[in-house]
Length: 390
Image (cartoon, rainbow, N blue to C red; front, side):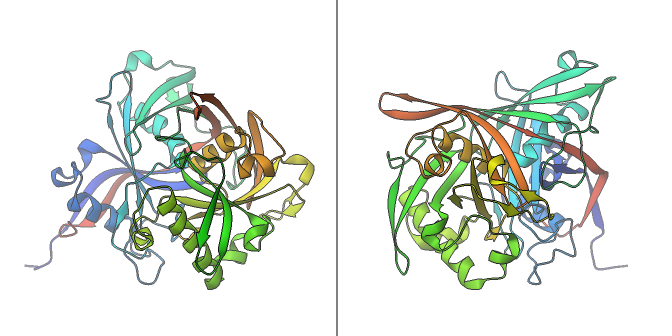
């Protein structure tokens, strides 16, 4: 008789949502110990994704060794009035034993509505046979409402289509996502649309610190020695660059009030994000596709979990769009002025995001941001983990 416990099976769905991939669970399908926040839940998700992996490859799990693919989602029928589904997102560290629950994933949001419809989390009476199904999502990480408009055909979610998203190889059906009141607390936590960050070794950097979509620190590309046309290999293979950008993130997080000391940044990798902006110019995307300066309003590059993102995080896209709508932010200035929609260039191509912001009682308030994404089930069934994994 073996002294090693057998593996257990957990129902799961492996989705691509936007430019990310993640493992989706229904809350009630998780082992009882993992149906509540805590060590058991984190340990199961770490084992599912193959973390922590000192080799950085996640070979023994479903993760693909990037921040875009080391993700887990837990969904349940909503307990929040006026909503269909509660959505909880976990960013699973690749090489360290922790799951960051501090923010949302805008890309995987594109798959939440589809999963909810297909798994009985949306009342059947509210699901049309054809057309668009409106799914009201309560994002539990940040306590915000998101509305997904999911295409339906003959009573089932329509996943195939001709909508193209830079950073995703194949076309699929378009899913429009509305982020309502996307700012968390004060849109600008310091009260200013632009701040000075004093960073040892780097000097004083002008920055826009925003809580919208996801807490984000924007700096000017030129101020940190970049052009805004960088691709992943330009940054991710440069240890000095990664250290510099992490230092900016840590000091920005303190300025935003997210942490008390820069040392805490190591235990909060998912938020805030750090991004750099520049006026438009021609460049070649990672696919080899040329992007013309005349086709974009500005350039943006953003870091995710210590690496340059291969495209753009959905939540950071919300931050970009809402910042572009406010006069005087670095995003607004790089983009040539105030606008209700912005098309920006990222490493994989371009993306258009709409947003609206108003000034009330001396404060800027983001009212809405809208992005288009797509989602597709890639595999469904059961994921297995050793019985002693939690």
